Length: 288
Image 1 (cartoon, rainbow, N blue to C red):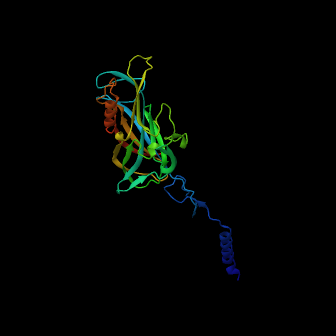
Image 2: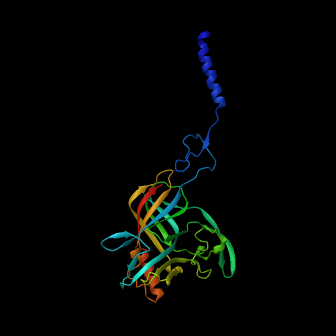
């Protein structure tokens, strides 16, 4: 009997430990930013997934050299007119991440907005995949929504501008921090015309004290464009990290063939829109 006592004691200890053990709840999805390696029981809806960002690296190509964009520098247009860039803002929507297996990743958050049409206002739910980029420096990062990244990224597709019915959003019906909210220097012309898809602002005089700012407002469904940016080297998402897509934007391409002093704003708008689709290059996928 004495020989069996140690085994009996060990068995009793194991039973007591099991009786006292409580499983640890946590996120068990390795794709989440709060994946808990120590957890052994999945929690209910506690996983937090990565936030997608786009980083625009803005440059000016002189032909023999490429430099970071500066707002304190004078540039020359196609007619050799000097001008100073103040700011470029533009909207993208309908963002889709293309994967090597042919599938598409999208932001799946929704947004309730008020739509104004024919004098009436209606509440609807739209896909919250709207981006407003404010290009007033060499590099600008725009944070978007959350997604579950997996697979290998091969490209990015988006719509330049905002399609109906989202384009008829009442700006006061969304949070003031949302891209669809009222913006400074007016980025929405109301229900009839909707949002300004792009606003290009510049000074067309070399005088340092010049305060006459020219703004080219691009809006209307005729200017909607589909963007298709391919990643030169397909890259895999890293589990648990926020993906940032790096886009090099050549601002000199925006002004290719442009005479900044041209009075015909319709011609300027058409040229700007034609140029912008050629100014973008998806260069890198970062995990941050």
